[in-house]
Each structure stands twice: as structure tokens, then as C-alpha cells.
Length: 227
Length: 408
Image (cartoon, rainbow over the protein chains, first blue to last red):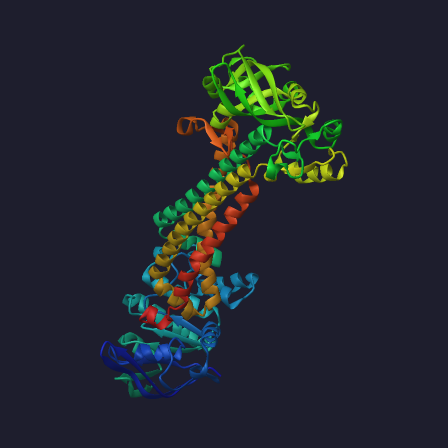
């Protein structure tokens, strides 16, 4: 089971003198293998929700389940392990490790997962080929275009065989052509491998691709549309 | 992967890394080279000290070192020859040492009369080295004596002139003996130049009233490392004179031993200070490196890298930084040691004639290998590099992924 269940979750931040309620008593359920977009204007709580679902932040109140695992009750080290084994992340700013090559950036996840060395190449090389990165294995991130870097980030998110991929504004730094290509790729992986995808975006191209669009406003769900 | 990351991270800011490596390397160079130079100078001090002093092992009346009384002498007989046969012993020199009063026709002065076996000690005792003679020659025996140039000035003596030396005899009565100046030396040690008369031991012994008497048997070995084993053999060999005991040079010449110890402690204290400065520099370098990569450490945490791996990553950077500097610094230090072992470094312009603990030390210092200390200097630097990385590592662990990355 790799569905996501968010129950009565609230999260607020203290900014200088004001308290900002980023997520307000939110309930949400996402089924296994869904391809869902969290949409909404800036400050609506998209990133906070993804941080909470990804175990990068803790809710003030409420419960979050990933499958049958209760994130809200986990220790820091349990959350770290969960992120490593169950969740893949794709970031808006790519966030590749600049001193590692394309191959090493992807291999990094297998290394920290403790996957045996001989298994690395058979898992990494087909993935890079599938993502159109064949021949770029030994390049460093600064030598790649934005679209190529984001595809490396997707490869890194996929190689650990997670059940959930969380992507925050993945097309924000890409041109139209690369954005469409990336979305097509993710949708294909979702269809072929049944991985649950949860995006945050206000990009209409991303929103149009999704099978389910959840719109947030002021930390609450404004609408939940299935297509 | 962690090692590879650590290595590459260091070269993200090559200038900063280079400067820090240089700081570590310079410290190690200074520590290794100057320690080996100091070690060489200690060996030189011991070598010179044992020649003029007790030998590597000194044989004395058990209370002589504390009391220095005239009557605490012993008869040498066959013991010198027997001791010389012990494996590791190079030579044995009996010596008679008497406080006395030297008188010329012009003046008188308190002196230490040193009875040596001139022929045997000719190539060994510093006062019998030809290069220290200002005039005359080294007497081969008889009533010819060597005196210091300062004493010669005080008594207004020249080579060939006579002097009378008065001292307490073996039986407690006052004795006097007439000698003739055969040579005048300049040692550079004021105490010796103004107050020592070197006489043939047998001549002095006869005047003393005990022809084969000695206060000291100076046992010379190949080097100070042999002392423990040979001392054991000397003590258990049964060939010591009656009422005499053997002492290592450290007990026989505590001033020299103390001077070396104090110098060594001061040097090591300076190294500790130097290491602390280097450690702070390394900590600063690593901390800056961590702070510049806050977002990246947030990413590592987000991807599931555990605290231990993150700490290892930062500590690895510290160790790599330290080891680079250690390799360069130790290499340079060993090279400089090797060079100065052959050519020596002449400090005469800085210190003139060097006197340490009443002994003259050659101002040309030759380095010597002190492998054990070199090893520990490197271990110490490695520990400093590791310690310097702990605080930055702690800072890296405090980075919260969500905060560090702002957008996740």
C-alpha cells in the first residue's frame, strides 16, 4: 500500500511577529498509483503540504500516513530511512550534487540505500537511456541544460524504486518543450510502473496533464477535481 | 562515494583549500624539521657531555654524586679492563678529580684538578682536542699540565712556566705538587677556562697519596640507546671496584638531562600552540565550506542520508585536508632533515660558542632522525584535523532539510 492519507493536519509558521497558518485542518486521501497535482497561488500551502507528506517537516496537529506508516509518529531517523526507501523527490531547482557526475548523482541513492556495487550499473544505465541521457553519464551538472538536469533529477528519484514521487514545481525552471517532455516522461513512468506521483504546480501545462487536480487556498482545499 | 565527495568538495574552492593545506604543511614541516634538528642537537649535547663528563655510564662511590667528597674515591686496579670487555663498551676512562688551589709566582686561584689518562683520552676528551689548544701541546704524561686561557691570565702563566697546586691528600693532610704548563686551551666554557687544570692521573694520584685512585670511571658506549642494556650488564657483571656503583649519564649529569628535558618540553608546548592555531584555521575552513552548502546538506537529508553519513562526510573532508598537508609537510620536513644531516646548520653567527649545562656544544648542528616523534606529530595533526571537523559536522547535522531548501 502506497497511498497517502492526510487527516486533520495543521501547520503554522512564526514569521517575525505574525503567525502564518500554512495548512489548516486539511484532510486528503491519494490512492496508490495516482497522478495528482496540487495547484494554487503562491502562499496557498502547496510546498508545505509536500514537505509534510515527504517527511521533511512535521505537522503541528493531525496525522499523515504513507501506506500503513504513520509519519507524524516517526522519529527523525525513521523519517530519514523512510525518505530513502519509499519516496523520490524532484525539486524545482534540480538540486543535483554539482561535484558528482550524472551517473554518480543517480548512483548516490543506491550507495546510501546500501545496494551492492555490481547492481548499480544494470539499474542506472537503462534508466538514463530511457530518460534520454545516454552518453552523458560522465558529465557534471553545470555541463547540462536545465531540461537535462531535471531528467537527471527524475532518474535520481526513480532509481531507488520508490512507491511515491513528490515533485515541487518541477517545470518551473524549464522551457515549454522541456516541460512537456518531462511531464510526458513522468506520466509514462506512472503508467508503466504504477508509482504514485504528487506534484505541486501552478503551471497550466502540468495541471492539464494531471488526472486529479487539488486546488489549495489559504491552507485549505478549495476544490478536488478528478478527470 | 563519501571519500570521493569529500575530496571533490575540497576543490570547489581551490584557493581556500590550498591555503589551509599550506598551513597544515608548514606546521608539519616546522614540527618535523625542527624536532629532528633539536633531536640532533640533543644527541650532540649528550655526545659532547659524556666525553667531558660521566661517560654514557659513570662509576662512582655510591654517595659521590651527591656529596662530591675527596675521600669518596676507589682503587681502579683491574676493574677498568674488566669493564672494557663487557659487550657494547667502547672504552673506560678512570678519572681523579680534586678541588685545589693553584699558585703561581704572581697570584693564586681556586681550581678543579682533573686527572686524566692523557694518551687514552686524547681522541675523546674535549679538552684534549688539538683545536682547543691556544698554545703549547697536549702533555703525554709527567708533570706537564693543561690550563685554561682565563686561568693563565689570572695566574699570569705561559707555556713552560711552573705552578704549584695544593689539595687535600688521600689521608686528609694537605699536599702540594709542582707542575709545568705544557699547553693552554680555550674551551669557551668560562668555568673550565678559568678553573680547570688537566693533569696526568697517575702523577696526580701519586701526589694525592693513592696512585691508582679514581673518583670516576667514565664508560663510553656507541650511543645513548645502548645505556639500559650495558648498564644492566655492568651492574650484574661483578667487575665494579669495591665500594662503587654504576649510574646512567642522566643521573650522573642531571643538569644536562634537565636542560634537554626543558628544551624538549618548551618545543612541544610550541608545537601544541601551533597545532591549535592550525586546528582553528581548519575548523574555520570546514565551517565556511559547510555553511556555503547549507542547501546541499538539506538535500542530503531530504534524500535520506543519515546523520552518521553526513558527519562522516564532513570529517572525511577534514581528514583529507589534514592528510594532504601532512604528506606535503612531512615530506618537506624529512627532506630538510636529510639535507641538514649531511651539511649541518652553522648557528655560530647567532650564538657564538654555545655552552649548555657547563658543557661546550658545537655551533654546527646536525639533524638526526626521530621517527617516533615524527609519527606522533602526524597522528596529532590527524586528530586535530578530525577534531576541527567535529563542530562543522555538528552544524551540518543541525540543518533542517525543509528550511535549508526553502522550496523542497
